[in-house]
Image (cartoon, rainbow, N blue to C red; front, top):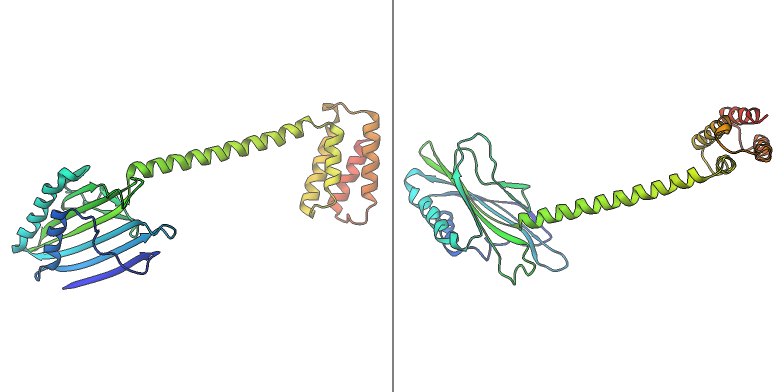
Length: 280
């Protein structure tokens, strides 16, 4: 029995066959299980392509199988095929996961991540470099994975063909993105410091005038904030060099503002009155 699940096809209108660059021995051994009349197969596939270049950017082909216990020879053939093709691989990992959780996963285009070492399974996977024509930048790899376990007189497992960027490329990309975020944060902090420095360099007169001039186009909440700042500046005049002319001019500006019919908020008006009072 064979069931196919079309879970995700990204940026394409067709489903890719098992990777064209599959290693010969592994692919043949996988096919033997898939085509066996005794096997029950459930498939999941996904494929991604770059819209601009039409280059493949991600692929997953996963085959879950159930075999009768007397078909262990098909499983052994797969393990032997991995051994035959390992000289062409740049990474090989195998083992037996007796834990209740999995730790070996492959980066996936369509299924978030693909588990290789399912609990209780014998597992193996190998990584291969695509051809130069398929991957001119050298940033992708093919991963072939396989696991199985015997349970209740049957053999259960899965076969994996996965095409994704290499871990080195993903790490470099993460480092570059982190560097860019840090750069942007540094630029932001420098701009903020520049504004702060400019504000620090302003005289008392300039600071208070900025508050008064800002009232005109501000909303109600911002007007209260500006008036509060002005009130504090008046209260802290002794911390600045303030001339009598500065005080007189600012006092006149507050009085003109108090007479403006555009300002009706009682809290705002009271703050402005307190500013005038503080300048007497």
